Length: 95
Image (cartoon, rainbow, N blue to C red):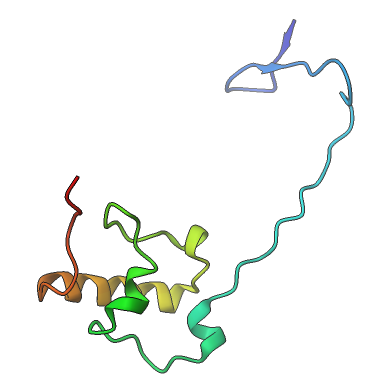
């Protein structure tokens, strides 16, 4: 049936083909594009570069998806917010 380990959700038994084998996925580490290009600082007026890190809806992409380092992600968020406030970028896109 189901096995539980301590508290939490019950875990289902794995049966069938490849039941006892765990495979490791090879995940390539994303590198920060700003560190790779050795960009001195992010400018909020550079909307072409900044817009690559926003979704179609206008949201700022998270680090795990964009691959930015923490420092450049903070700079990017600050630049996007400034560009929005000066009306260089939209807050949201029209549907």
